[in-house]
Image (cartoon, rainbow over the protein chains, first blue to last red):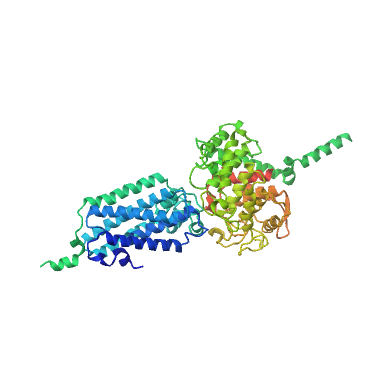
Length: 260
Length: 361
């Protein structure tokens, strides 16, 4: 997949003011891609239990969302609305994908967790995009870089139980809380506890993570919800209060060309 | 003459009574050592109790500790004081609306199963409703048609850790042990369904319809794979073979059933107490000791001939091994593996005390 295309929100997004049409087109692309990836990853196979399916669906949508996000809107307020709207759309998409194979317990809490993760991630992407634009990056580059940055911010800690697990196991001899800490920083864990899923004892994780056979505790759901809600408010609220970048901020090359 | 007849009759009675059975099968000096080891282990466990009665704030470990006390040769019961009743109260405080007995989202089936064993061991009818609730939870947790699985699915009949995750042989065995302790009707379909899963976890192609099945008679973790600690794959190993064999016996399978015979042959042929049999590692070694003691006691033999043609008295050898591994503070711990919490002395001590108690019975 080409990150430039994915994050640009359509062919005209590099130059035209960003309205609702590119956002709708981008969301349609997200929905199509997400559903294909979810199906390809075996979400509808009979081996996958309901809660694990919910984790798979919500995590795929969470990771893909920033890549398809059309970026900041013309104003900070519009950006905030776009972030919320996009996140709500992602949540609805997950609900439809999950309900298409039947009712699943915990679907409401899993979808709310996805909503909060999306708002946080897209809020971070908008923040990064704004900062990059102020440092002189052109609109398309700022948007692409921020999209990939937000995805990395989500995916790297999500996989922490895998890549950080061996180090945590070694550290646990001195600091028993190290295992729980590695599990707790993962957004995948957050989606799992909201889905009622014992993530590390799913077959795949049991086979590939060293943590499954060790003693750890998952974080509690309510504090995780509260943490994301607070982070969302900061990330969506702070840029809205700051100066919104103008179109000329993004078209830095052409702006410079116009200066005598 | 009359005196001789009386002595002979008394001796005959003693030989036939269960209490004297192990005494005959076990070296008397070793028996005394094993009892002292149990006492020291229980003393250690008593020191681990929190003010709320829990051990490590865990339903599972508390329940195992409670069972270790209640099944000890000292005959402890709730009348002996707070060190018993506080543990019971802790378990009762963790009963959930769905009948499960657990302090968290994790391991609900495992914790409920071991709590049922502990509560049943109190023999107190006051807990009948709690036990019935736990039984209902475990029955509902079995993977079957209610979850959309047909009998031809490899998960069918199994029981997992407690969410809706994949089932495995270890949790299935513990759940069956809990259901047996909870006096589940032997005609309940849960046993037959479980046997489908158990048979699919055995390396015996005559009774296992899975394509990977071998023919050594031992068991794997679940149909088609083992944990990474045992290099994944489908090789039989001791912990699961003991779990599989005891599951067959819990379900009422006769000793002359070819599945039971095949598993027993694997157990005796692969006999060792130095590593988890069938592997070259000590991962899950104390789990194996615990399950091995239970299955050998349930199978009802004192001696067997191992794969090298050597005659073995399992009670003597297991007791001697466990006594030799005890720490000065009375605890046991797996010093060479932290897998499956075997680096936690309270858990390993409870398992080991229960294993010794089975050897002493």
